[in-house]
Image (tube, rainbow, N blue to C red; front, side):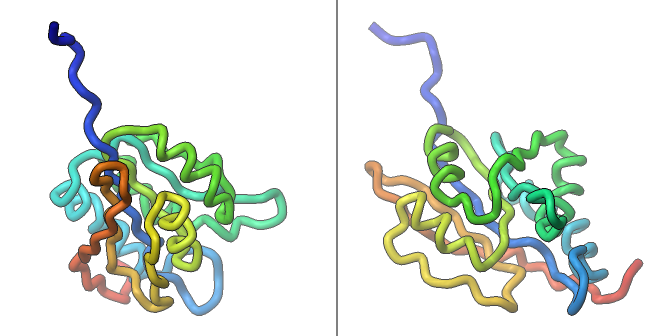
Length: 165
């Protein structure tokens, strides 16, 4: 007897870091704003519309140091009417991963580069390596083969102008 319900799509986690930042300040630089504006076309072409999107909580009540991730994803979220989950602090890897692992389909995570390896480990990747501090273009893709996390890398392929438009 077959079920009429469609099987849930397999979990695929797409992780990017926030776009370029200025030497001082908490927002994106002009180059970062240009990257964020170009991301919707790139991400949609590569991965389609994500089923879930996560950024870290913008504020912990003391500062708004994690605004860049939200600024990075805003053009994509606006264009495709995405709900953005910002319930987790930047260092809440375990709670974030536990939430993601309950999902199916495509999950997009936009996070701070220094925490991405910890998120990947919490998602089951054994040795993800570190994300380079000057790398704003890499994409990590985590899929699951027979329950085992498999990490692949791709590139956005963007070279945004440093000038404000």
